[in-house]
Amino acid sequence: MTAGHEKARELAEALLVAAASGEQIPRPVDLDLPTARAVRALCIEGLTTGRGARVGAYKVSLSTGTWGALPEDAVLFGETVLPRRSFNDPLLEGEIAFLARSDLEPGCSVDEVLARCLVAPAIEVADSRWEDWCPRDPKRFVIPSAAEIEADNAVAGCLIIGEPWVAPDLDLADTSVEMQSRGQVLAKEPFRKVMGHPAKAVSWLADQLAAEERTIRRGQIISSGCPHEKPVTVPIGGGRWSAAVAGLGTVSVEFV
Image 1 (tube, rainbow, N blue to C red):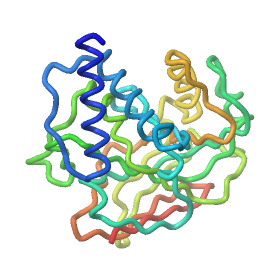
Image 2 (image 1 turned 60 degrees about the vertical axis):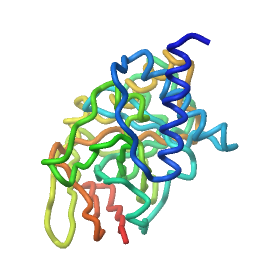
Image 3 (image 1 turned 90 degrees about the vertical axis):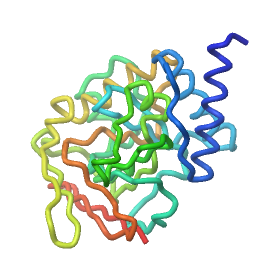
Image 4 (image 1 turned 30 degrees about the vertical axis):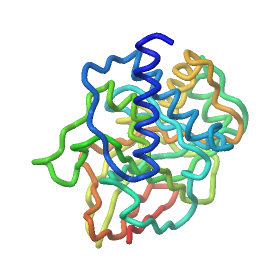
């Protein structure tokens, strides 16, 4: 085993322990992208096959142009209640989720994605295992580097899907998501900000996964990316948030 492989293995083990314990860990020194990708692969293996589970969903991270994977038990449906203490500092992102009705191969077009998928509103709960991840406190928050985000499985936390799944018969690019809490609109943006069209993000993901010998399989879900730049954070005391996607419906999460 080379020094690079050993570094990736040790870092992946530390991140998996941090994910299980809820403790944040120091950020690595001189982490490069190839090592970070190896760490991500090991983390995904530890979260899925290492636990007798499968990948339930993939997520697209627009800020760094990367992706992460969530095990089946991190994909939740309908109005959801989560313990705030189970997260370090959750960041909420309103998105459109895609459900693959057949495998999505690399090179698939936007039209092919739309023909092969159903869609639903979603809230992605992003969270990081790195120290100084604290988006609710800008004075303390240190944005992870691209390599740190890659290694930390694109800061994947969990994904909440609003039901039912429907055919994408509306113009998703012109559809907006509105994040609300306590009667206030926290963010509202159209999905054209997601690579011009959220189905384009799914097509992009299929190509990215192929480079690592992965395929979006029938029954897997894709969280296609968040259009709103304003962070929606969760205080220690929790609360209730909703994401309303015009034409698709609303999904809610409560932290207690």
